[in-house]
Each structure stands twice: as structure tokens, then as C-alpha cells.
Image (tube, rainbow, N blue to C red; front, side):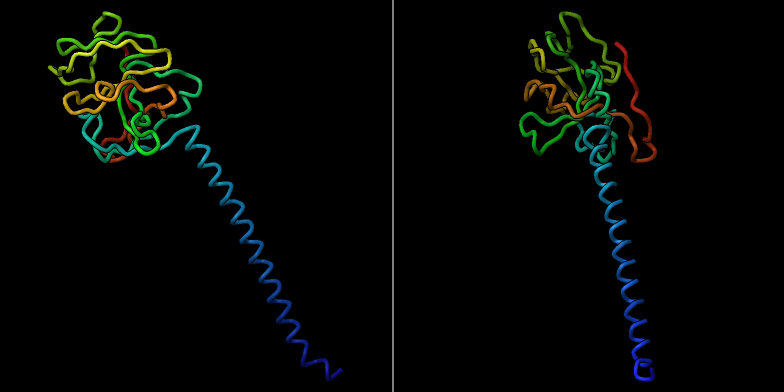
Length: 197
């Protein structure tokens, strides 16, 4: 009996160490499991519900400015169609894998777009563009009829925008989603206004 007694603390220490290892492994497993669930959840939101876009450039001034963080609503376009006046984030048709732009939808599939004498006409009718500063002219002249899957997009800063006047139309699959809420800087926070024509 006396010979076994000195080994008892060692067995107890080993048992405690084993319990700690198993506890740590269990905690690590639980943490990893919930982290994986969180990553999957965020990924699904990013691709199907909403994502964040950082405005870079002056092409949408005075309505959107460099450095603004905008939540982009992807979900709406899963079931609905882009409408004229929507501000959208899109994959740049010239480099869809690497560049994203923010522009405004002007022409819808099947429509005829004419830009003439500084004004924009859709199917022969001049459109009202209340988001543009007074006196803004749209140049140069354009006459284009859109195919059934194409959209014509323009920046609000017409003299300083690389848009459909330069690189042509954007197919529907390149439209990521509609600008929904400006979340930063905080003084600009707010839901993007809906426009009616």
C-alpha cells in the first residue's frame, strides 16, 4: 500500500491534465463550428442579400462622394428588375473580374437611347433627371437601341463619368445590386431616395 501512495498524485495530475486537454479541445471544436457557421452566414448574405461598396471617384457627384460606404441591396434584383433611376453597383464590362463601378440606370432593355443637344431621350421622349444639378448637359450625342438584356448607365457627374457613353451597355448579369443605404461617413447616413419619373 505504501509503495503505491507516491504515485497517486501523479495519476491525479495526469487525470486533471487529460480533463483540461479534452475541455480545451471541446471548446476549440465549438468555437470552430460557430466560426464556420458565421463565415457561411456572412458569405450567403454577401452574395444573395447585401454587400458593402466603397465609392471611389467623382463620377456620381454631387449625390455620392469618394470614401462613402454604401450598402448594396442584392436581394431586390433576385426577384425584381432594375428600374430607371436606380443607382447600381456593377461589374465594369471592360474588366468584370476586378473593377466595380457605381452608376445610374438610364436605359432599360429594348429601349432606344438618344443623347442630343445635351439632353437624354428614351424612345423619343426627354426624361426628367431631378438628381442632376441645374444646367447639366449630357454629351456627346448617342443613338443606341438596347438588346433585351442590356442596360444603359450614366454617372450623375456627366462631364466626369466613364459610363455607357464610353464603354457601351452593361448586360443584366453585371448588375450586382441597388445602392440602398449610405452608412459612412455618419453625417451622410441615410436611405437612398427612390425617384419617380
